[in-house]
Length: 115
Image 1 (cartoon, rainbow, N blue to C red):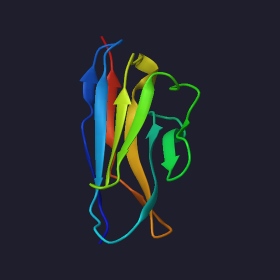
Image 2 (spheres, helix red, strand yellow):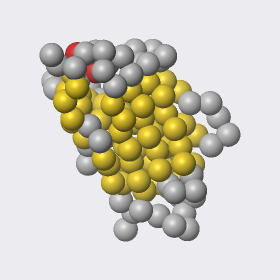
Image 3 (cartoon, rainbow, N blue to C red):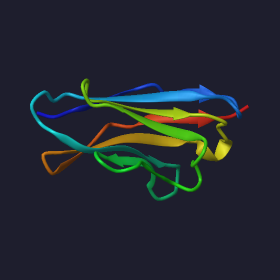
Image 4 (cartoon, rainbow, N blue to C red):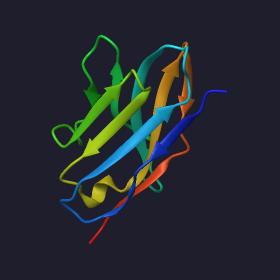
């Protein structure tokens, strides 16, 4: 069974940085698309960053220039480097992967930006 294992997250002060990581427990299946979504309390889930092999990474306008997605396809890993964090970035961040044309989601990791 395919599983996305997330790590990172936590409490950080405004202006700080944080890195989220996600590992896909697959060895023989191709992962075409990996990325991150987030959902703040009481709000709709929104795209943060998404990358498909052979294409440039798509970022939400609200995080562009502050967040960076990195893929390590040899290890089936995707990272989200978050800089200059704002209170508005507070949300549950979920890893996403398209594996053999099927979508998979991580359990979610809480990121709280507060002083």
